[in-house]
Amino acid sequence: MKFSELWLREWVNPAIDSDALANQITMAGLEVDGVEPVAGSFHGVVVGEVVE
Image (cartoon, rainbow, N blue to C red; front, top):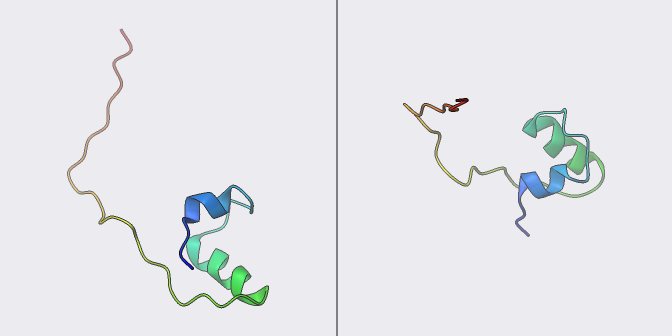
């Protein structure tokens, strides 16, 4: 079964990294085959906010 890490983080401690989360799921008795990014990483993206 595939599901979003973002969805899962609504139900677990969000302060841990993805590897620790996968390890906790495995230790709970559920096998994690792998963690895959949905999209590639962004390069050269600038985010700004207009305040006035």
